[in-house]
Amino acid sequence: MANLNDHMGRPIVAVTGIGVVTSLGVGKSDNWAALTSGKSGIHPITRFPIDQLNTRISGMVDFLPSSSKGASPLTYELAELAGFEAVTEAGLDSRDFGGPLFLASPPVELDWAERFSLYNSDKDKDDTAAERLLRVARSLKELDIFETTQFGSIADRLADRLGTRGLPITLSTACASGATAIQLGVEAIRRGECDRALSIGADGSATAEALIRFSLLSALSTHNDIPEKASKPFSKERDGFVLAEGSGALVLESLEAALARGATVLGILRGCGEKADDFHRTRSKPDASPAIAAVRAVLADAGLSEDEIDYVNAHGTSTPENDKMEHLSLSTVFGERIGSMPVSSNKSMIGHTLSAAGAVEAAFSLMTMRESVIPPTINYDNPDPAIVLDVVPNKKRNAEVRTVLSNSFGFGGQNTCLVMAREPV
Image (cartoon, rainbow, N blue to C red):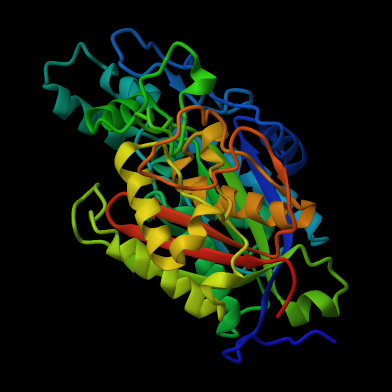
């Protein structure tokens, strides 16, 4: 019989359900087929006017009913689709999940359609724009606009839809949010607060405003002519990330509870590690010390040595500075081995899904172990001589993968790493 507790005497946390949506499609089957074939989901933006914009490409999800309805409706639909797929695969009741919900989602803003609706109301009145907005807002008789601007409203609706228990938790830790949602689920099970948890990362906020904001930070790629070639992590000519949307969901259970009900165990969450970076609001500390500390923390939490990690699912954004920092952190922790250790980036194909990224990439990491296939880093045609990594260039690789380190290094100093294993201890 498998050991039910880890090296620290805590309940081992198993994954029994996975759900994914990205610009490559809906569901983990379609996503995995596209990802391992090196297909890109990056395409020209059609959702809003792009005249005069420096970046005119994205990994937006344009094929869902909510794709044109604004960030809040789309984020909800993405979360619901991934959550439903994960819960169904776990063999649980999709109306009565029975455990807590941890949702990573973007900060919610009033969508432009609603802003214009408020601004254009009763324009014949003799008052200022600000006074008009306040007057119209006070006269609203429905809750639609109010609910779409509340940070926790998406999780509240999901909790009702999927029958989770307790007050749902909504969190935002920038690009690390999806990994943080998984970490919170793992910790809740380890503390004995629940036998199962649903962790979801979802982000449908690739709006015109978001595009402009990241452009002003010089963070986005401007390789518009061939969209599918724009995201090129660790390459010499990388020039920024590609804004994208998506969702990832994991059903987490104590191994004991999963085995007791006869569930199929898809993988094990061995460890979680995090470290804050106080260097800058968006930039990472040049010496990579917080990222190094996060990687070391996750290895310690997992009870594994550096030599026991088979593959790294990199944060790999394709920005000049972040890729350099990630290489520094990995080479510091893993030493000379990092030159021959597979380190690939899903973002080369799906772009950067922001709040969802850590959850989406955790899902792909679990599938890598189950399928014994490492997805490639595409667009790797001109290696950066300062970044010596085996990025699994351009084509998938068949490999026996027992353990994966998945990195999420976010703006504002949010660094969260996960270690997953194929089998229990």
